[in-house]
Length: 415
Image (cartoon, rainbow, N blue to C red; front, side, top):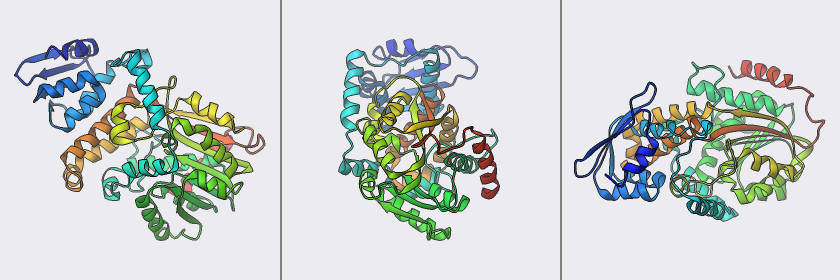
């Protein structure tokens, strides 16, 4: 137990963590406090403990996935929350698991890993999104929105919050009849189909996932909008070479995180070239509240290879090079945390189905991923940004009033 004690003693102050070693030794960390979880874990081998010392995030994940760390009181969500709640980003506390050299290595690995050339982008997308549509149906909302929902009311269901997100974004796009809209990273087609229903627009959705493409096409036909909504398997860079100046509006939700830090300039240059002279773009992305950072080893290895969560400063600096005018920025601070807790609850409710589709190790990996993401948005340095860009300063009304008016109108149509 001595190998873990210094780390846990330094981190756990509020709430309680009881740890049982493989030899039966029991140690307790922290003091019970209102709102802080009480969790008990047991290690079945010293290997699992050593993994955590070498890399707390990746080590804890793999020890949990391989059954070397068992949770006997609480669950993985509460364990990760306990650690993060004791080291909240807001007050400057940090879950310090690496020294300057280790952090520098992570930074370099992230930049190398995010050199997403076309072939690598396709394989990275397949790693996460081509693992079976049935899996995503089990924990997402009915429209299969795999991104942060929008919660204007606390009592909303996940389906209602995801519908509100699409309406909120549609309002910021300032849609008008006859416009041509591009959805970069269209997922299973929900956003594109919604925009076509809310306004008399034509939409092209692009993806690199074969499974997403097939289902999106089926859904557009079933919704009766296939004449105005089509989908294509193509990289945004290739589309920019083919369709320059064609789109009045661009929307991209939850895709920028996959672009890779080395490609931010390329992404925005492609978007600027794809838009008309008075085009408008709405980018919805996860972002860091603080300075640029690196992607942790667990996420790089198991969840989003090639992915990188940008700081707002990085995003805006890259867009400026393509003369895109930032016309509006909204920070969604806790909306994704609420979304993730719904996804986690749905995952727990469908454990048997998920283990049947995959296996127990995958299920534990998935719950660790959702738990870690939730903690990052509740106590860590992650949030969501909705950034509106325009190519011309004259493209949008002078005040934001049009957004509220459009949102109210779209809400009436959607309901």
